[in-house]
Image 1 (cartoon, rainbow, N blue to C red):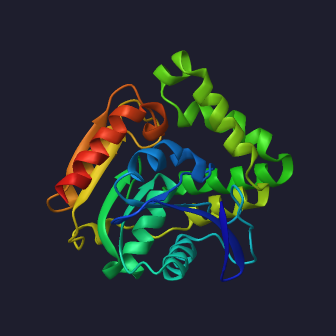
Image 2: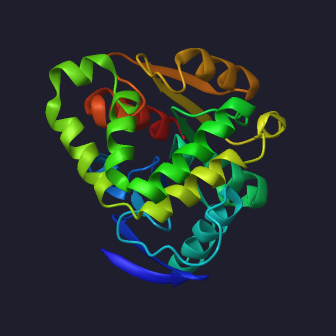
Amino acid sequence: MNRIKIHDAELAYKDVGQGQPVVYLHAFPLNQSMWDEQVAEFSQTHRVITLDWRGFGNSTLGSSDSSMPNFADDLAGLLDHLGIRAATICGLSMGGYAAFAFCRKYPARVNALILCDTRATQDTEEGKRARFETAELARSRGTSAIIEMMIPKLLGETTLKTQPHIAARVRQMIEAANPEGIAKALIGMAERDDSTDLLATLACPTLVVVGQEDKLTPPSEAETLSAAIRGSQLALIPQAGHLANLESVTVFNQVVSEFLKRM
């Protein structure tokens, strides 16, 4: 695990392998270890970069807001440090929101895009209120309250019934998060821009991936997202929920591998 001071936070990151760079951006409220299986697989053919967002995993929180534009700036700073001009960006859920912000601010630095279990639209007013309330819950009761709330939403029914070790792993990742980091990220997601207008401007190869049992951003959201991005490909991962890369590693890796080979 490497560490680098970017802006006002110290970010933990991994940089493994050689070749064309691929950056994996983790979901809320997890950390970069959610990509361990992808790091192991794709570092054989690519240069793979993962990082913990500020306030998650082994990264410090810093004093700035955890807004999606600030996440994008953190990523740009890390790529500068690593001497990477442009990369394939893969973001899942909140990582997808950060990927949209990165595309908006740094379009020339995106060679290709993989959007997993995410959406371009901003939250509804009800959704924003729920995020603000959950932020207060994290501040008042800590990560334990977030764990019990999030695991049933993050994982598909098949995973919950047949892969208890995945739930245990997700629990461990959430426990590693800073409660204030969780709160700030929730506020950042609630206040994020609507990226619908961005979709028609995306000129890079794009893959949209979704778990068939995703409760938070269901397949219908992925279909809408893919339809709005010219030339994009859509992949449905059977028997997987919101964390498709964890719940169905083999199928997810195959889909991403085929996309990267076509590039």
